[in-house]
Length: 340
Image (cartoon, rainbow, N blue to C red; front, top):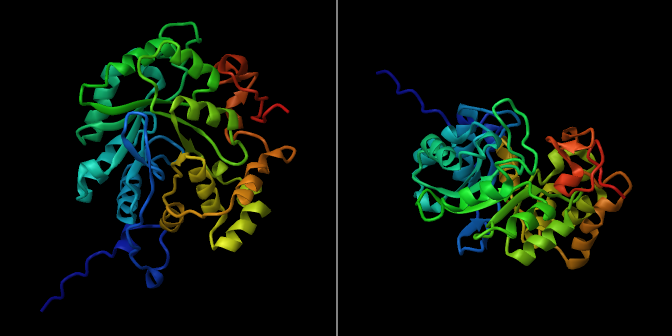
């Protein structure tokens, strides 16, 4: 009698970067806190960034999302620019998890600022999950078909794009709308004309680039912040910082889990990205610690040379993605350091 072929194991064949099969155990579904947005919607405070550094990803993205959902993630962050929407949708549909239990964010591409409704329809077709929980303007800069950035006064302006975003509410296509990479200066311009306050502003935020003024402003306006690159793209002077190690040693957590705890204490959601099984498990957990320890983390950026964005490669010739630092309202220098 022929033996039936043994089915592929979840650990060995589905997860390339998993712990060794002999050590693998399916972890329990972990409880993730939620934040309430200004329209009453609930957003899981920890999500998965569905981007691998370059647009696309195919099966690797699908398998990453499938793994994340099995681990308990219920917040997935994609974008038209990432070219991952189709594979994120496949993973959601195959998961067996009710659609309403998964919070999906995607974003308007910079080349689509003048065609918002058509762009959201295209995202919906790629995702094929019925609706989008949160649709963000990916960046304040819009671009023409050649890649030239529209200047702030050129049409479509951020206000014109936002007005088109507002028309999506009530269509059933999206539940909430928001922005990404908007500074206090740009939010001020937007809110002066907005009928709907953005539910979320997704920005880079971590102990090297804490953006305290942005945090305070968004809190005062009822805008929830979601942090991308919460670990500063793994920069060692953050990940190996003695303060994080000391707190983690006391609480039994890794430095990245200490950072996750710091963000959640601030009321900031976070979307770390990883295709590595072990890190996905780590990233869904977070440390708790005292207010004094939180203050120590708050001060990490004060070390000379530490206060910087992780995306300094975009800061060239006095501009970030085609807009001057003054136009954006950021106190940066070329290379991404914050002015003293």
